[in-house]
Length: 474
Image (cartoon, rainbow, N blue to C red; front, side):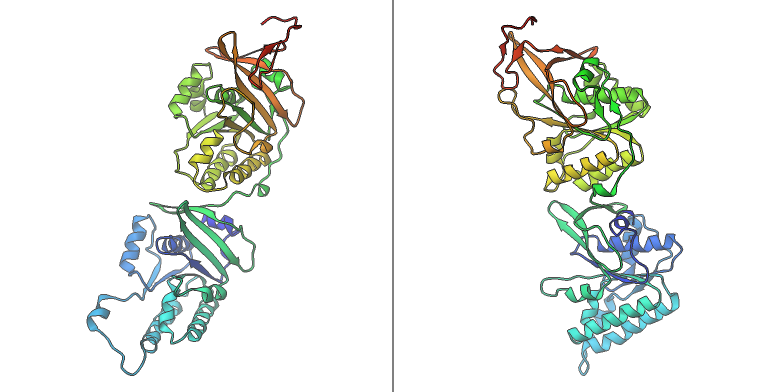
């Protein structure tokens, strides 16, 4: 299973026994189906031992999810209707002593006949009721697992541990422990034990779909690197590139910050337009604006987003609110970068990212994603909206400015009874930049950046005044 194999750094180790834990509805059986069908695809013999759900229901459910179970052997040890109608009672021997022997013999016969390379048992906790005491249960399970492993089988077994009947003993006996969780913020998977290998710790998002389970490993930036030449990405607007002393560098993180409607998204797409002219691919993830609205608005300022999408040099992805976890979104971005070679990635906006993506600690998730993109040599543009239209200047309402290699701000300016816009650069790590502010306009011919506003002061504080000794006129 691709995502789980990544968490386990290659997958389960052969000829070992692994415990799969989780409450009802967490996806234990679904994961077991993946385990068996992947074995079938590799030409391995597989056995499904069920002690709860009958074989007919399991096959029907598997078929509904698209699993081909024709070559999987089933050993159905679930109680049937006859057990209830016969009303068996045990006067001399305990039920455990009477039931254990035929169950054990059926397993021995099936394993000896098929000699499977993969065994999925659902659920091992049923053996607890076939043992007369906890010591006998532990001894029987250890013996059973050793028997299967000595038959060259890789075993995945589930447990139904509860507060009243915990499964700590099974965790000690297994070679690895995989946990499935169903939390209010979403489903997750984690590994706490894996003998013989390292693994990726922490909770990783999962999703149960109509085709099975999808696993989204948590992004670790330090595990991804790509050698990239530090080239400068120009905007195609000469005055803008003068502000930035050439443009933005590959593999840097840039924040475009400012109040609503000031032109942050348009400015980001201007860099993507120029990249498209060089045949490079960019992607913008929009959390707030409809895709069609974005296209129409950009075309009105001479940024041909629609034709860029048609040529494959731009992808506009609209993210539905509360639909993705941070791990799912990170995998989506990774696909664009690693498979489609995206040179620029824009997240529009940071506020939309924090609200729309389920899960807590958004700053940590955004940090990991940006550092990954940086390591891969991808230019990152983060659109950040501040609440204040005027007044005291601040970069962000969130503590994310430390992430940025470059900070470009846009701000409204009231001058002679007219609302105008200005642009400036606050930070640039890899080169120098122009310290003056310039007026910026979004026109039908494109973005227009004016000359430096050297005759004004107090723009950042909102208390604007003319410099009397200036030789330039507004």
